[in-house]
Amino acid sequence: MHKNLEFAEVEGEKEPCDIRIYALSTCGFCRRALAFLRNNKITFRYIYVDQLSYDLRQKVKRDLMAKFEERIGFPFAVIDGGEKVLVGFTETKYEEAFLQ
Image (tube, rainbow, N blue to C red; front, side, top):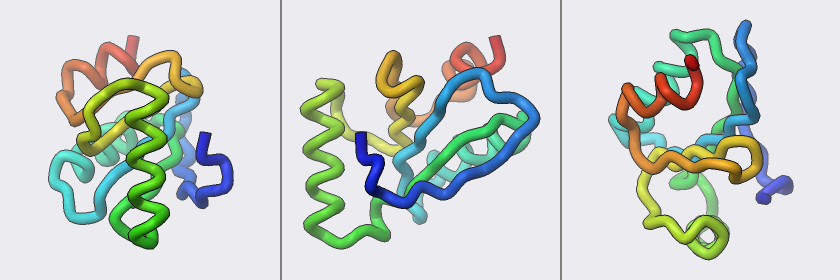
C-alpha cells in the first residue's frame, strides 16, 4: 500500500517487522514515536503526510481508513503490511509491538 510514496528510511540494528509510520511533521506524539524507534535502534520507514499535496494527503487518509477501518490519528503505524496497526503513540503499546 502506498508503494509509490517516498518514505524516509531509518536503519537500525533491529528489524522485528516491517514498520511504516504515517506522521505529521508538527505532531509531538509523532516525534515521540519516531524517537522511540530511533532510540531502540529499530529499522523503520516514515512519511510526513502534512508535507504531501492536499489531494494526495486526502487520498492517503481515505486509503488508510478504508483498508484498516480505523480512525485516522497520527502517528499511524502499519506493521507488516497491515497485519497490525497502531494509532497514536503510547510507549507501552510500542514496547509490546516492537520490543517483545
